[in-house]
Length: 485
Image (cartoon, rainbow, N blue to C red):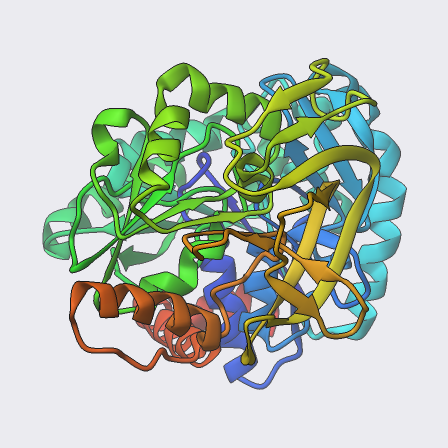
C-alpha cells in the first residue's frame, strides 16, 4: 500500500507530515518506508555503504525505524548556483547540469524509478511518498517525476497539504486543484491544513465552504508546534537575537549546506543559535561556527565582500571558532581549484587561521567515520565526510581528530586551541565533543559545567510527540481507508 503527500508549494510541511505518518504507521505495527523520487537540497547524508541522500528522507527513515538508504531518495539535486546543480543518482555523483539540461533528461530516469518502487512494494507494507514543491507547476508537468508524474506512474492516492500560517490557504489549495488535470484531481482524496494558530471554530465555516467548492474533504488541521526536529533545507526560523547565556553565532553563507550539523546544539538549554549576515550582526559571540558550503570559493568571496572575512580574523584573537567542511577549508591559507570543480577561479586566499591548503579534486569523498580527539582520547565523535577537496597540512599544522577505522587524521587546531576545523558532519551529535566545547565556554563565563544529553534519545521522544500531534489532529482512520487498509 502507498499514500502520497503533495503540497501547494515549498515549505508547507510535506516533509514533516511524511515523517509523522511514518512514525504513526510504525507505531501501528506496519513495515513502512519513506520515499521521495527527486529531492533538491544542500542538506545531505552518507549511508553506511557510502551513498549520498537527502537529510529529509534520513529523518523520515528514523521515524520509520529504518537505517537510511539511498533508494529512499534515488535522485538528489544539489544546487551549485542559480541555474546549475550537481546530480546524485542512487547515491553516486551522476554529473553537473544546468536546470534546462536536467529538465530535458528527467524522463530518462522514470523506468529506473518504477523498477525501484516495485521492489519497495515487495519489501514494505506501506510506502509514504513525498512530492516536491507543487503539482501545479504547469510548466514542468510534461516531464514531472516527483509529483503527479510519479503518482500516476505508481498509481497512488494523494493528500494535498496547505500552510495556513503563510495566509491564503484556501486559495492555495483550491488554486492547486484547479490547475491540475481532472484525472489528477481525482487522485487527490483529501486535504490537510498545516501550521494552524488560533481558534478552530473560527476556521470551521471556511472548511465547510472549501469542501463544498472543491468536493474535497479536509482530513485534518495540524496546529503549529515547537519540537526539536531537523529542518530540511535551511533553518526554518532565522534567529538573529541572543536568547540565552551562551551565544553561538553561525555565519549565514549564501550556499550553506548541512545546516543540520547545528541541530544537536539546539537541545542545550543554555545555548542560543543565531545567524549573521553582516558585520553589524556579528557582535561578540562565545562561539562562531562557519558551516559547510556547496560552493566554498564563492561563499568565501562573499565573506570578503561583506567585511565578515576581516571581522572573523579580528574575532579570532579573542574568541572561539569552529569550521565544518567548507567552513574548515575557509579557515586555511588558500583554496586551489585546478580542475574548476566549483568555479573558474584557480586559487583564492583563505582566512589563514589554520596552516592548511585545500586542493579541490574531481572525486567526491563520501564515508562514515568515527574519530577521537587527539588531545583527549576519551572524547569521541561520529559522523560523515562529504566533500570534493583534500586539505594538506603545513609545517605548523596540528591535526584535531584521529580516525578510528583508518590510519589518518582529520581537521586542524590552532596553537592556542581557539580555532578548530573538521570535515566531519554531525560533529556535535555525540555528547562528548559538544560537552567539551560548551564546558570550555561555561568555564570562561564562570558558569557551572553541564552534562550534555544524548541527541538520538531526544530525537526519538520528539518523533513520538510529533506522531501524537498529527494523530490527534488528522483523521488517520480515513487515511487507512484511502489506502484500503
